[in-house]
Image (cartoon, rainbow, N blue to C red; front, side, top):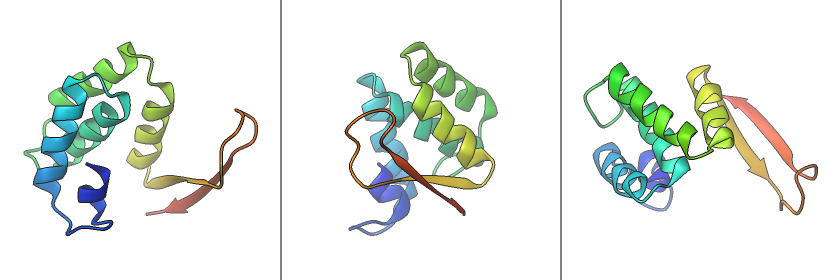
Length: 100
């Protein structure tokens, strides 16, 4: 879904991204549920629905998706969080923040 949403390696297709996020979310994929929530909240590739967005965020939260929800919150503020380099331990990561 993320690749379709952002046109990375494929043509940008928000509708397909939402479809893929829904399918992955049905399989309990926390990141997909958070990304789906963002799409629903902003009306990206789908009719905007704050109620559905809240439900998607709640489902991600119930599955223990703190990191995914953090990313969703940053996105809401207009900040994109990108992992840089390899992650080998919780304290050995670098975040690159960029205003989108």
